[in-house]
Each structure stands twice: as structure tokens, then as C-alpha cells.
Image (cartoon, rainbow, N blue to C red; front, side, top):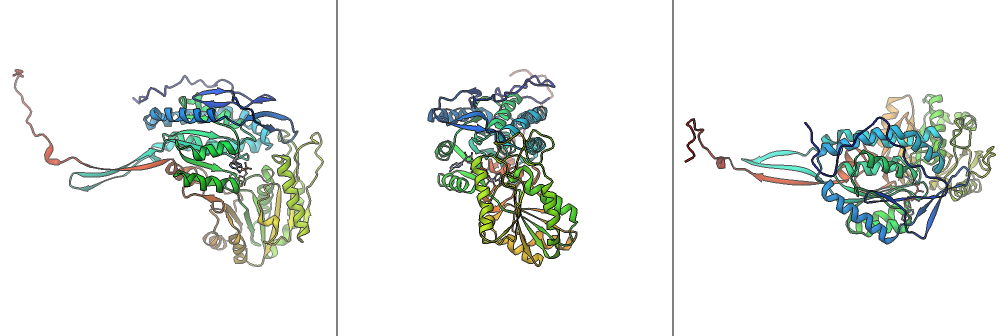
Length: 523
Ligand code: NAD
């Protein structure tokens, strides 16, 4: 029979329907999670979480005080002492219960994402599901944690064990409020670390709900702490010596600064940053599939996915399909994510919207053709939302601002090439290396693309090739700072270090004694 080896994890009664999780109420303050308790911050500075479809203030996010940040780390340090000693099977058991609870509360979390982030409901469900899959994959934890062993000499063995690092930190972006926290804390905790996690100040609700469920699943006090804030919280995490490693997902400026600061302080760091993902369309592609894939991947989630296909490279005669692409994009409905007929929700903030609009304007000034202009759409019932309808810019060249910068909105820029090789050269000249895709019916062209393309996540007739968690997310070039990727085996390696033991148990030391068959006389 399996037993729970530590006092700190007790199997909880696990009913089919667990209790309700806390949903932020209008105007409420986001709580900190420190030492297993959800507490109010003593902060005097707050960031407003704003519903991007209405401008309604959903909640207030505190800038955690120095004392609160210190307490979060202390509680994680304290919890690490016992959590690291728990058996692998008990940590796996927590993850199995956690995935069950996420399934049960998936729609509640998704609704919060629609409110705080603006995604359409089905896409918000996908956000939770892609994170949930990381937790489900931790069912294979024992295999991931296996070490190696070799008898290196007579009676001498060398073997490796994979050990946690200690307290680790996670810093999240706004665009996947459930998936990205789930790339981080379940892997960190399953491998025996404890964590201080900072959700995005723009939409922390999903991370808080997931933390509640993790506690219900059996995560002990202090193993997971949630702190809030902006740059000061991040700087604290970079500089506090108790935090041994930092996982970051977000934009270039923060990612580069965090990687540089964390590694200069001797910490491990993995920083996934910005992107400009290209889709190459060959004339031999299945036209309907290619166009549908482009429309979905460019405009879904209002273009606010790090793997959005924001750039299309039409090769040769495939450019004749551009009119059809425009017609399909026009059919997408813009509006509130709670309306089941809507395809494109609002952008996260007025600032993000203005920035995207000005990049569209810069394309016009620089000589590109705006063949579908989605600026200032009328959205019935939501006059104040941050809406940008699908926008397509043709005849873009690689020196233009709209190509150089990640727009991170529902804007597709189109370049043209004469050959596949020319298209590959365009993609490879881009500084980013997050993802790219090809649409073709030719295996030979697909192979040529796969072998020569530099991007780290590659799709062949697949528009958003985000790897499932039995693999890892392998963006490269300017899309990634670090060398050990998120989730999958790489994720396990990031949060653990190897210890290599060489032991000698000499053969001749075996005590040789004969069994006695005589009545013991105790003499
Ligand atoms: P962001 O960089 O503005 O914020 C990310 C996190 O960093 C937040 O928690 C924020 O509080 C913090 N932060 C922001 N500015 C900071 C600074 N100057 N110093 C320290 N910390 C700072 O990113 P965002 O707008 O929330 O997210 C969008 C970006 O994330 C896009 O560039 C997108 O491509 C990228 N992203 C990348 C991936 C990937 O896997 N490559 C996945 C999702 C998002």
C-alpha cells in the first residue's frame, strides 16, 4: 500500500464536486497568497484590472509591500524543508487531484478570463485546457524524475538523483492568464520546489483561482505563494538571494532585463519573450485549409497570442488567394467574449489598442496597402471596448515598422516571395524565432522548410504549433533568453539539478556467517 511519507501532505476527502472558488467581485482587491492564507495587502498603490470590453474596474491589484514580499519568500523557504522530502508519488497524487479540480472548475476560470482579459469564451476554455494538459502530463512524473546508474568499477556504482532547487519565482504575462501560470507552478512544485508566483497585474484572477484549487488538491502551506505588483515586485524577485531560479513569460524589454539581472545574480532563468510568427503559403497548398488557418491564427484571441500568425508570406501564384482571405476575415464578428457568436474580442488595454492602430497608420505612411482596415469598428452594446477588427496590410517590406515590431493585435501583414527559398530567407532574417508554419501539399517542400527554417516551433499545415506538454515549448533567437525550455522534460530539468553519487560497497565486506540450526542457548 502506498503511504504519504510526509506530515505535510494529507490525502483530503475528495468529493465529486468541490466547493466553489472565489470569483473577484467588482471593486474587490486581489488577495496575496502567503503561507497558505489568502490575505489583504497593506499596499498603498494599486493597479486597476479593467474589463477591456466595457472599461469597468473588475478589481484592484496591490503593489505588495516589502514586508509582504519578504514573508512570501520566508514561507516558501520554510515549506521547502518538508515539501522537498515528500515522496514522488505523493506529489504526483497532488497533481492528479489538481487536474481533476481544474476540469471541474474550468468554465468558472474561463469566465473570469473573458471578464479580465477579453477572450471569447471558447478560446478562454482553450487557455485553461492548454495549462491543464501540463498538469495532466505530470502524471508521468516518476518517469521524468528517474536517474541513471552504472557500475563503474568492481563494487563501485555511480548514480544520479534529480533534486529540486529550492524557492523559485514565476512572472506571468497578461495574454494567457491560466496557461502560463500552469506552465510554471505545477512543474516547479511537482519536482519538489516551492514557488513565489507573480501573475500579470492586468488579469490575476485565473492564477488566484488555480492557486485555491492547488491548495484544495493538497499543496501545503507556503509551497505556493502569490504576490502582486509590477516592476518593484519583479526587481525583488531578481535580487532576493533565496529565489534560486526565475521563469518569465512576457515582452522583450522585461524579459531581457530579467534574464540579465537574474543570471548576474547567479540564478537560473528561462525567459520566453516576443514574436513575429510567419506563415508561408505555397501555391500547392490546400487553399481552403490555408486561408482558414491564417484567418484563425492571425485574428483569434485578437492577435494577442505569442504564437499568433501575424505575418503571411505568399509565394508565387498563391497571392491570388489574398482577396479570399480578406473576404473571410471580414466575416469575423467583433464584440464581447461572452457573446457566443463573437470571434474577436477586445484588446487588453486602450494603450495596446492605440499602439496597434498607430503601427497600422505607420504602414500606410511607409507605402504598404491597408486592404482591410479594422480601426474604429462599431460594436453594438459595447461602445467603450478596446476593439480593433481584423486588419490586413499588403505589400509590406521587411524594413517597415509594422513588420519590425510585434503588433500583438488582430493585424496580419503580408509579404510576397517568388520561391520557397526566398520565403524561408525572409523568415530567417527576422530577429524572432518563436514559431512559423508552412502550408503545402508537397512533402518535399515541407521537408525543405523544416530543415532550413530557424524558428523553434514549426508547423506543417498547422497554424499554431504550440507543442503539447509531452514536448517542450522551444522558441529561439530573440523569442527566448535561456537554455532550458518550459514544460515537458526541459521544464523538469529547469526546476531540478542533478546530484551524482559514487558509492563503494565492497564485496569482501559481506559478513559471512553460517546459519545455526541449534536451539539458541543465549550464551
Ligand atoms: P510584459 O512584458 O509587459 O509583462 C509581463 C510581466 O512582466 C508582467 O508580470 C509585468 O508585471 C512584468 N513587467 C512588465 N514590465 C516590466 C519591467 N519593465 N520590468 C520588470 N517587469 C516587468 O508582457 P505582457 O504585455 O503581459 O505580455 C505580452 C508579451 O508576452 C508579448 O510580447 C508576447 O509575445 C509575450 N509572450 C510570449 C510568450 C512565449 O512563450 N514566447 C507567451 C506569451 C506571451
